[in-house]
Amino acid sequence: DVKVTQSSRYLVKRTGEKVFLECVQDMDHENMFWYRQDPGLGLRLIYFSYDVKMKEKGDIPEGYSVSREKKERFSLILESASTNQTSMYLCASSFGLSGRATDTQYFGPGTRLTVL
Amino acid sequence: AQSVTQPDIHITVSEGASLELRCNYSYGATPYLFWYVQSPGQGLQLLLKYFSGDTLVQGIKGFEAEFKRSQSSFNLRKPSVHWSDAAEYFCAVGVEGGSYIPTFGRGTSLIVHP
Image 1 (cartoon, rainbow over the protein chains, first blue to last red):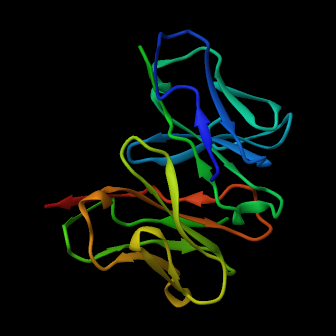
Image 2 (image 1 turned 120 degrees about the vertical axis):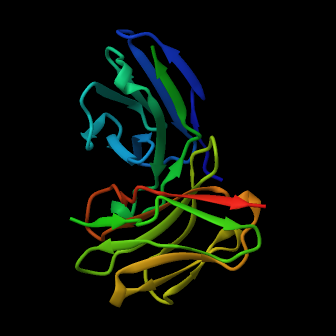
């Protein structure tokens, strides 16, 4: 079974702090994704990566950056956390060899981030 | 670009009753369609997917979905709901040759009454 793990289930940070959210997948997937999930808004894509050191902006990249130094690890960085970044953050991965949006995505359990 | 609509934000059913969750998509060609479930406090898990062939697709946990091209729909069904089915359900659509990212609907929250 594919396993996607996220470093924290719950995180509380203060405004202005730099925040790192880590995601690791164990199935050699090419593609990795970061979403945020808010009530009534569903999933919104922040960034995705289709290869090591490659990244693409999603729908809401402002205030976020990402890092993918190794294939299995995809990090989301909040450069200076703000209260409007309080949300559930979901990481996902997909195989990618066939490419494109036909691949099943495998999700981590999520990190609920609260910014005070 | 493709889009997905889940018209129902919340659905409430009694345990043992049948269930149908609606999903409509907008795309010119044959889409690739997915249903995911998110149990409380968890990430999303794939229930089933449709790429081609038989338009009635069986998934895990006793769910099925039917692709109806004429109605641009991919509704999720279950004949008898269990209390453990209470969750958020997301429909998603991908397109061949499109981006790496499927488009997700906003989700339908299923509430199950005993």
